Amino acid sequence: MAGDALDPAGVYFGTNTGSVFASSDEGDSWVEIARHLPTILSVEVLQVP
Image 1 (cartoon, one colour):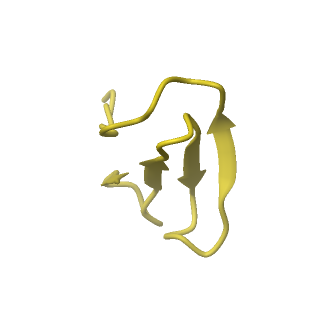
Image 2 (spheres, rainbow, N blue to C red; image 1 turned 90 degrees about the horizontal axis):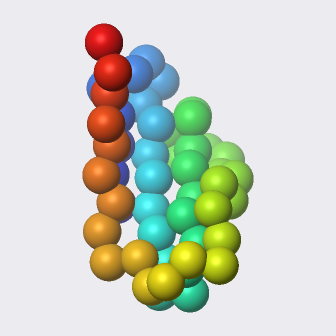
């Protein structure tokens, strides 16, 4: 699981079934942003200035 420094904070997590989910409202709602990947072991957020 990872988060960003935006307001409201974005939160992201990956699953062992190869999906990545994101929330742009601090976890109130979620959307699948990637699927059919290998097992996700970690998620990182890169913020571009």
